[in-house]
Image (cartoon, rainbow, N blue to C red; front, side):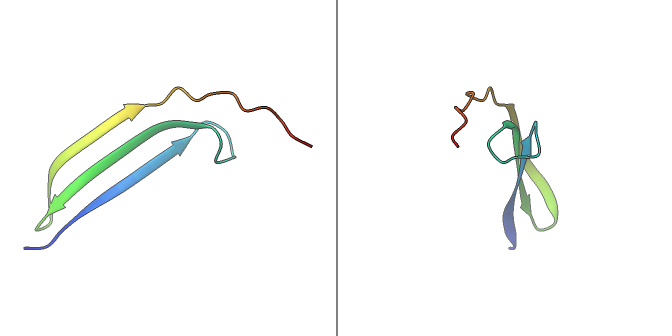
Length: 49
């Protein structure tokens, strides 16, 4: 049995500090057996110079 979990991490802006969604998919023997998707409300970061 071959299985893995794929993760897709989405951002709202070109930076990695603006997450907006995440999806995880479990694949067993080439078949998607489970899928989880959720939106993320990110916290505004203070800009540092």
